[in-house]
Image 1 (cartoon, each protein chain N blue to C red):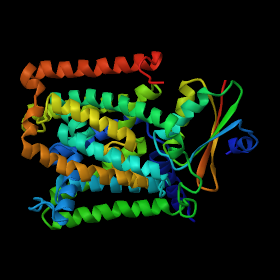
Image 2: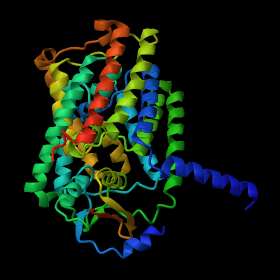
Image 3: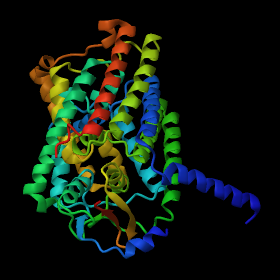
Image 4: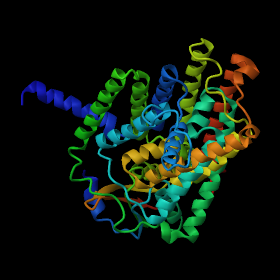
Length: 395
Length: 85
C-alpha cells in the first residue's frame, strides 16, 4: 500500500467514525432536521408523514375492493409517501454504516402493542390532520396555532401512555419480559461489510433520483433524497418525538425535547422568512383543526406512540434499523388512518373539530414571532425546572 | 477495550433480561429495578435495543448511579453493569 492510499484510508476512517460510530447529540440532529424540513418546504410544500401512510392505506383498501375509486397518486408519486420511503431507506443505510442494523424480533405481546399503538396513532393523526410531524412539528413551524395545541395533547397522551406502561409492568409484566431466543439476528458475521452495503444504498438512492429526473418527476426524486437525509439524521441522533414527550415524565430528562424545540426555533424562522418574502404563500401548511381536533388527536396519538415505542417518523427510522415491532406499528397506522380520515370527511365531523389559525394573521409577523419565541423559551425553562425538581415525573 | 477485562469479573446481584424489548421498556424496567436494590449492589442488564447504549449510561449519570460499562456478548446482546451508590 502506498503512502497516499493509507493516508486516504485513515482519513476515511476518521470521517466514518465521526459521522457513524459516534452518536450525535439530539440538538445536532434537530438543527439538520430543521434545514431539511425547510428544503422540503422550498422544493415542494410542507413536510409531513401521515399523509404518506394515508396514501398506503387508500391503496390497500382499494386493492381489497373496499374503496370505489383509486387514490389520485401512486405510492411512488405521492410526495409524503416518497419522502417516507426515503426516510426508511435513509435510516436503513445509516444503521448499516454504523453497524447497528439487525433484525430485531420481539415477544408476541410487544408485536400486539406495536400494531395497536400504530392504529391509535393513525386515528389520532386523522383527527389532528397530521402526526407528530405534520400536525405538531410542521404545524408549529408554519406558525399554525393548532401545532401548539397538539403539543399539549401529545404531552397529555404521553403521560397517559406512560401510566399504562407502568400499570402493564406491574400487572401483565411477564408478557413483556425479555424472552430467551427472542432478540437480534446475528450481526457479527456481516458487520464488517455492512458499511459498504450502506454506501451502495446511498448510491442506489442517487440512481433512483436520476431515474425520477429522466421521467420528468424531479420533484419526487428530490423528496426521496431529502427523506433519505432525514432518515440518516434522525437515526444518528436517535431523534425521537416519543422520547421527547415521554422522558420529562419518565426520568425527568429533557435532552430530546430541547432538541425538538431548538429545531423548531430554526424551522419557524426559516418559514417566516420564506412566507414573509412570498417565496411560499403565507397560508401554506395552515389547516390544522384548532382547537379540538389538534388537542384530541394529540392525546390519542401520544398514547399510541408510547405503546408503539415510536412516533410516525420514529417508527419509520426504527423500522429501517430492523425492528419488526415498528414495522407492525406502520401497518397499524395506515390501516386506521385512511378509513378514519374518510369517516371524518364524509360524516361532516371534520368541520366540528376546528380549522387553521395563522398566528401572524392574529398578531402580525412581529407579534406572532415574538410570541412563538417566548413560548419556546417558556417551555425550555419549564423542562429544565422539571429536570431539577422532577415535579412531573410519574414514578 | 481495557474496561471489558474488568467487566468479566463482576458478580451481579441481580440480572435484568430485556432482550427483544425496545424503547422505552428497557429503561423503564431498569429504573424500577434500581429502586428496589440496596447501595453497593450491582445490576446487570441484558438487552438488544441499540438505543440502550445511550439511554442507560445517560440515566445513570443524571441520577447518581455508577455506570460500570457495557460489553457486547457473542450471542448478540449487550450486557450493562450498574452499581448503586
